Amino acid sequence: GEALEQAEKLDTIVFDKTGTLTFGKPEVADVFLSSATLLDADRLLVLAGSMEKQSEHPLAQAVVSEARKRGLKFETVSDFEALPGFGVQGRIDNKNVFLGNIKLMQEQHIDFSSMSDELEKLTGQGKTPMILSVDGRVEGIITTTDKIKPYAKECVHRLKSMGLKVMMVTGDNRQTAQALARKLDIDDVISEVLPSGKRDEIKKLLAEGRKVAMVGDGINDAPALAESTVGIALGSGTDVAMEASDITLVTSELQAVPLAIELSRQTLAKIRQNLFWAFFYNILGIPIAAGVLYPFYGVLLKPVFAAMAMSLSSVSVVGNSLLLKRFSPSKFQL
Image (tube, rainbow, N blue to C red; front, side, top):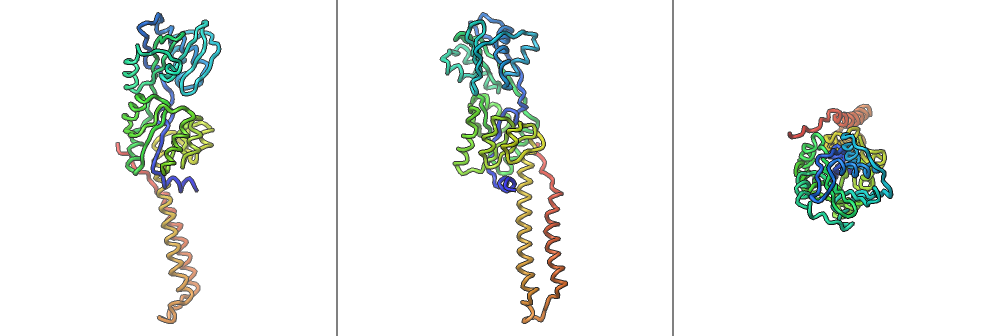
């Protein structure tokens, strides 16, 4: 009940990117080698796949899948460590290997300037780059793409037409995030957010006085879902996300998001109408039943008619509520 009431008051919708606006199943798009490397593309994928085999991140699974498609064999990794929001590190053949985003290279003081032009071009295309370095030297870049879900753009347009501000939050770098946002007509993007930082971003929006819905599906989204005014979990989401949310959709289709908000608005409108008619009947009917008109007009309502009028008021309220069964969500403007 509370979630339904709060959903009607929303003014801002924040979408997680991976698994919500996109399918969350990225695939390797490109393998680029540094001009100074002695490795070939397969060797680069062997090193990357050996590292990512230890991780459960969707990007890691994409690299492992590509290496297996090429029939490559993985090597033993020691001292492996996942670095949330950055990438992974470990040792292969007694060499320090790092695989991750630009921030990881910066943290490790690894010079990637020789590939900066390529990185800018790739991120501008909406691809997610992972940089591989061995013993402090950049060897190449692996990029991934994640397909946008059907009706994602139409969902954004529908929410905007309902007067809602639509935002996206992601751990992707700014250029990659903005490239996707442009495709979906999302004006506001919060990028380069660590998994633990989504909740803080929701807090900032709430502090501005906004009524915020967070839409997500993953474990990393759970704190933000719990913090938001209304947390909306997709039906394909993790159990943790569903438990933290206020509304769990029975589907992973994005059309259900504006539908849920539209339904909450219509439901609250019916409740207000019913309250009005209930008060109207009682304010008008009780004095008449008590004989207030008798001294002036000689009208006295018989008990049977008073009972009928009261029943009619109940029937009208129930009938008005049943009209919700005819609820038909507005069609997306394609």
